[in-house]
Length: 215
Image 1: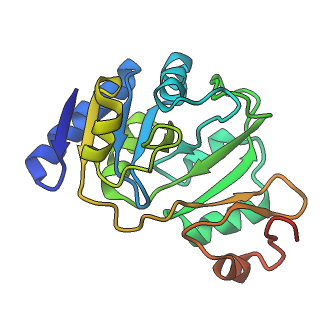
Image 2: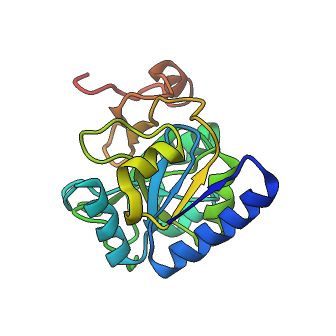
């Protein structure tokens, strides 16, 4: 278990390298995002995803979202990206928007009981992007045990997860502590599944017919 202070360049370089190596081994890491801190694993290593769910105290019925380091990666994760999803991505990525799309059937991963869909986000934090561009898609959930508050620093995450996580990347307290907005782009009319950092008014500037739950 190692914690690296990414607010200094030398430690950041060492931390990112250590995090990338850990993910490739199948270990868990904690990394900053533009919302709260996340606990992550290689999305294509089923045992690593299982370890992530176990660390959080979750079951397969709550599969983790996937974070990516480039918009182009999204095309490889879905068979056909709906126009509404592409418009939202163009407008708000990188940023606090998670979209739910149909995953490509050929993907060799097991995120849990997804029903053939995947929730994807490209965060706007430079440290997260640096890691993701080396590791490829990562299964990442908020860095907290189920029922506990989301970690706003890597140190706070370390208090919860201890040795379940190999590498912690510290970048200071989260600037925006609101979780990402989640939009379901699989349904005929896109629907907000979770209201978050992106308000509905901004979303409707891009997709006017987007709905809130119950509308």
